[in-house]
Amino acid sequence: MLDHEGQIFLVTVFLLALLLTLSLGNLTFTKPRLVNYIGELQSAELIHLARFYWEKNNNLSMQELTKIFYHYDKLLKTNIQKYNYTILREFKRGENGFGLYEISFNNTIIFRCRWQWKFQNMYVSFSGREAVIFKNYTLIYYHEYIAPQWGKIKVYPQIYADQPAEIEKRNKFWTIGIPIEKETLSLLDQYGIEIIIKG
View 1: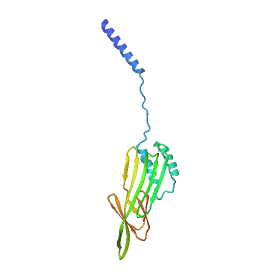
View 2: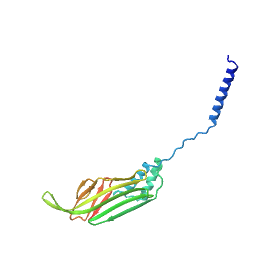
View 3: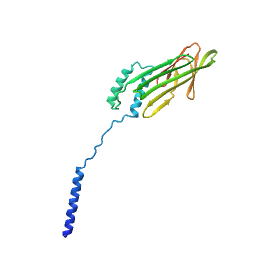
View 4: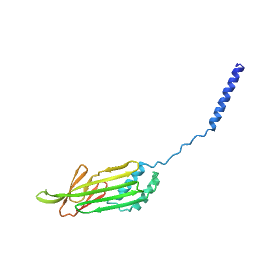
């Protein structure tokens, strides 16, 4: 049995525990909130959309593509916000020419496909017993993927000829041999984007 001081001590501990429990119950705790993070995935998907728009076999307008794109965005809940876009296409023919395809989403996310060619010389190549004269060009071809999350990424895709031509990759540029009777050469990159060289 506890003496008088022990009983007072026990009552004090009990009251202290009760007050502590009541005060903890009255504290407000923050409730965690989920935030819709819009980041690398969303920017990359817009880059893919823009790249697909320039594909040679694409028959859809950018308006039709964005309608489909945002339909699937809603289904998959990827939370890609609505963007305004601008489309730019430039082309300069000649011995030193260039081409540009670009789509910009709110001037922050940009897909750019750029190529530039320069006439070097002419050469003769033999196919069996037949001699063929080629115009020799150097070609620089690349894609730029620009977004706030990663800055600027430059990619050098593979290219292929869907017409008779001689193509060879050298570091970050290509040498292209175009038969002399051809004024225009159409190439495709690994994503199906058409590259046109008009001498």
